[in-house]
Every structure is written in C-alpha cells, then in structure tokens.
Image (cartoon, rainbow, N blue to C red):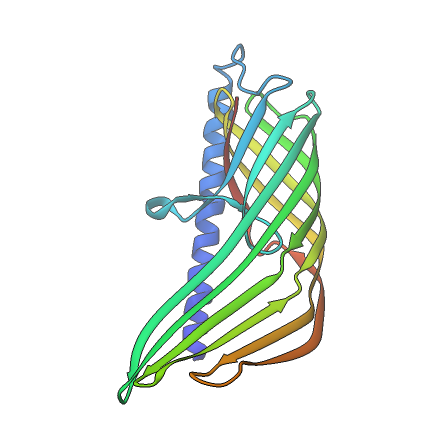
Length: 262
C-alpha cells in the first residue's frame, strides 16, 4: 500500500512539474514573440463580452469543461470588460435532475409493475469583479473577488407499485417530499490571461474561498394503499432534518482556463 501511495504521489509530482515547465516555456516563447508584436493589439476592447471555460488533461488528453459552482454543477462563466482595469464576471449554473425507472416482474402467478420518479432543481449565480494589473502586450494579470448564492429546490420522489392477480389489481402509491435549501459563498482569486490571438486567451486561476451550504427541512411521506376490494388506506409520516456545512477551501490545483471576447 505504501509503495502504491509513493507511486501515485510520484506521478502527481511529475504531472505538476510538466505543467510548470510547459508554462515557463510558453511564457518564454511569448516574451520573445512580443518583441516583434509591439504594434499589435490582443486585449479585448471596453464593452466587450467574453465566455470562459475550464481546461483539463495533459498534452494528448486535453478536454474543455464548463466551470463549476459550489454544488459542483456546471456553470457558464461570462465576462464583461468595463474598462482597462475593471472586468465584471458572472457564473450561472442551472441544474435540473429527473430520474425515472419502470420495471415489470412476476411473483408466482402475479404480475408486478413498478414505476418510480425522482426530481430536483438547483440554480446558482456567481457575480464577481476582476481588478487588472499592469502586464505586457499579451499577458494580463488580475485579482478577482466573487460572491455566490444559490437555491436548492425541493426533492420530489414518487413510486407506484401494481400487483395484478386473478381477482384484480392492487396498488401502492408512495410520495416523498423533502425541502431543499440554499448556498452562500465568497472567493478570492489570483489569475492571469495570456492572449494567443486577438481576444483569444489561455489563463490560469488559483484561489481560496468560504462556503455555507444549508439543505433539508421538513419531510413528508404519504403511502396510499388501494386493495382489490375494500376501502383505501392512507398513512402520513412527517419528520424534519436540516444540515448546515461551513467549508473553507483552497484550490487543490491551478485551474487552466480558455476563453474568447466578442
């Protein structure tokens, strides 16, 4: 186990060293190229809008991914350049989850049919501002501050179970409703953009933040039994559970970004 841990740590260090060496190589090549680009303009103009994505992988396995919010939901990160020093940014992360399962089985001579669904929605907003520092003709360093707030919708779970025999069909309907919650957070970031072409850039971001996620609340479970003959019966089970997680975090790795201004 110790050998496996050391090998894993060694592989991680090799990947990190590769990223650092590649970054220094790119910056060195960029500085040399900038000497011949003194009259070119690469930065976006004031009032331009931009879209930013995350990049992961190394060399032969590079992928482009959306940013993520505090709930690990994919978000769209938009930028708006107000002036040479100020750029506003906004992350939007809508997320709708819906699950459905249908199953048919037999129990002796009886036919058993089962149908279940689960759904929940979430949305978060991450407004922020970037304060840009003095850089070069292609390199654009900045400090950013972001806030985040989101809403977690109710969790709705339902199932219907039908059992059919020679006398008819009996049914059990179960419905569960759980309250959602909310998330609040703040983040400080150091970053830089390097423009490889006019308004097209690769970037690096590294930061730390604080988040508070509150979820749960009232929970209601209703079970309705419909027999083949006789009257229906309904039972209700009420309870309440609420959790609150306050988390201070530091990015485990440098985030590599890719974006374009329009």
